[in-house]
Amino acid sequence: MKIFILSLVAFVLCSNFALASDQSSMVSAEFSKTKSDLQNHFNLIKKSLRDLELEKAKAIREAKAQALKDQEGIKAFETYDVLISSRYVDNEGKYLSSLEVSPKDHENLNVLFQSYLRTNPLVGRLSAGHARRYISWAIDRLKELHQFNADPSEKNNPDLEILARMTKENENSLGTVTELASRLGVKLEEASALAEMGKDPNQVSERAPASVRTR
Image 1 (spheres, rainbow, N blue to C red):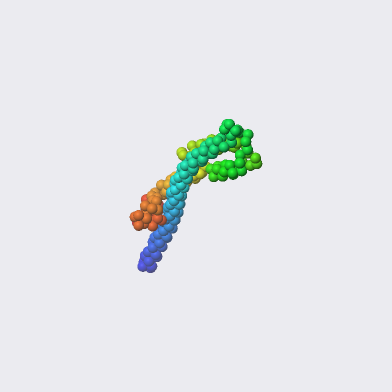
Image 2: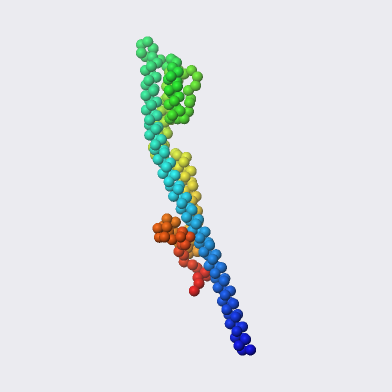
């Protein structure tokens, strides 16, 4: 009987240990899953931020390239303004604004508007004076656009404005993920840094809370 009781006690103790071990394993597994989820989300946000930086750099390059085209357009319109004022003159060589421009000049001006301002405003019969007023407007508009494109920012460039908002949203999300990881004692690392160390991005280091540590 004594041997039976001792055997029963040993069985109960072993069962309790196994149960405790199973519970600890369950908690550890849940902790590891949460850790992995946080790391994956962290990596996705970091990648998104890097992609946004690349898009921002591209938008700035394109704006500055457009600024050069704006300057080119300004010069082209200024030159054509001189041509109009020199071609449409009276018998004494004085500029006459009421003279009708030729079909060729009409076509050329629309080509300039389409190339530099993406519009074709000149329709119907066109006088030299009217043509020059349109040219003056085009020059002013291109100077305004050049000012914006030469120094692009989220205040004057729609692409940069949108990218700035998206960056802010991702930074806020990153802050949330980092805070959650801190509560769990998890140290998050960028995928690039982990790759350099030859680690799996999901195998991040952590300071496990006492409740999930095993001996």
